[in-house]
Image 1 (cartoon, rainbow, N blue to C red):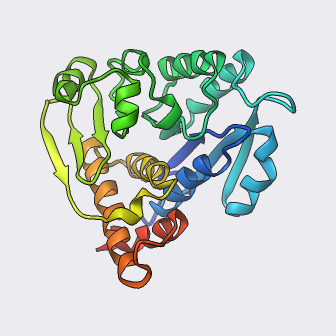
Image 2 (image 1 turned 90 degrees about the vertical axis):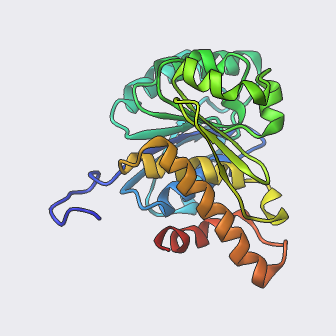
Length: 259
C-alpha cells in the first residue's frame, strides 16, 4: 500500500529502452505493462523514427530518443546519456525490439555493464555475452527457449549460472521457470496458446520492472508478473478464445494483480 504522504516518483520510476526501424511495438508493450503495474512514471527511449507513435500510447509516457534520422542504433553518445539518465531510475527494461547489428549489440552489452539501476534484460539484449555483462548485478533475464539457445545456454545449467552470476532467470514457456540466485527453481503454470501472440514477453518484462520499481523482491516480482500474465490470458480465453491481443492482456493485468 502506498504511503498517503508519498509524492510523484516515490512509487516507482521505470525506463524502457527498445525499438528499431521495423519494431516499434515491443518497447511500448513493456512500457504499457510497467504502467499497468502501478508505477508513478514511465520513460520510454525509442529510435527517433518512433517518437510520435510512442506519444500516442499513453499521456503519461515521457519520450526520449536515440539514434537519428538515418540510424536506429544506440550510439556511444546515446549510451553516455542513457547511463546518466538511468541513475535516476528504479528499474529499466533493456532490449525489446532493439536492432541486432554487431555495433548495436556492442552498445547493448556496454549499457548492461554500466547501467546503475536494476535491469530486466529481454529480447535483443539476450546475447551470448549478456550473462557475463550482468554478472554480479542482481539483474533479471527473461529468455524463451529460442533466446536461451541464442545465448548458448543449456536449460539444465540455469541454477548454476544464476548462482554464479548473481541473477534471476525467468525461462518463458507453457510452464514458466523462475531460477533464483540461490538455485531454487519455481514453476508458474496456467495460460493458454493465445499467449503466443507477439508482445506478451515484452509485456512480462515491463510488468516485472514495474513491480521491482515499487520495491518487490526480484523472484517474487517474476512469479507475480508471470502469474498475472497467465491469469489474464485465461480470463480472455473465456470471451475471445485464443484470438486476443497483447494490449488486451495488459489491460487485464491490473485486475489480476489485485486478486
